[in-house]
Image 1 (spheres, rainbow, N blue to C red):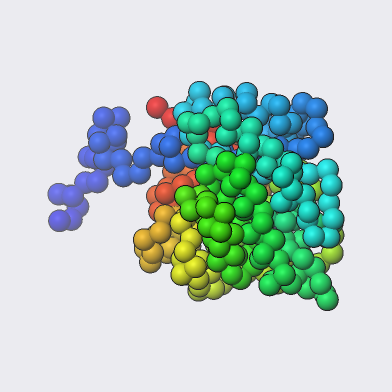
Image 2: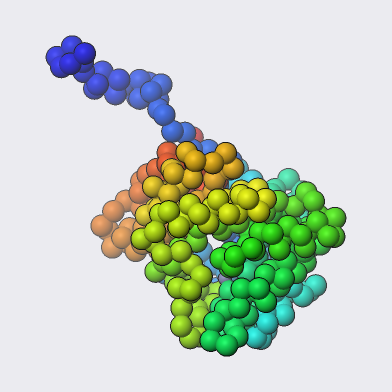
Length: 323
Ligand SMILES: [Zn+2]
């Protein structure tokens, strides 16, 4: 059927028709809200370029979680910012480490939310790298047992989902083994499977003080030019027994979200990272775009591409706007 018989505008002529025809519905249950918890902090500190986002002390976590829950958000991703750093990232897997304290606090005050936590070393190593730096490189096989230790310590604190993000080969195998060894069979792994070498992490890195002190992460993060390599990363995590895979960042990587959704049956998460949030806030504050509308468009398009889970600093803002 062709024009003039075919008129696609008929389906858009009223609010009721547009709602009936809607193909992508984003819900509060799709969203995960990232929270940065800083050791030794009294109160909260703004994250410079991320208007509305704060680093908070552990004692503010209960209120922060309560606010998110009141808005209908049911999952959070906790990241710790420690006071102490050393070459082997000791405070990443310390019993009283900041992430462990945050997870324990979250677990004790909210049994009705999914508590996720980042499992990496970069906030905790003096080098700022995601593993142990040795002989001029990040040593893969020395680093993965430590990621296992991080995951097990977070599981002991009560986490539901650990999210290894170091891009070390074999990190899912190491994390699964470390969890299972201690009886944490029901702690899920959401691996940051295809974490790309991106310029969009810098607001988080500045806030979390985890910018590499020398070199960059090009030896372990995926080049943004290589979609087959990204799929190989996803595939290898699935073979290692991951529960949820992740594409990171999100906005410029929707082809990969879509491809992962099409190829695999494993749930797909997309991480709408700090720089993506900062871009929207900056453009909004200059009056170039309507930040609220842009946020709904971005999140809906991430969902449309095939993401089952969207980790986003805009979760609270979006939850307020959703019907
Ligand atoms: Zn890292």
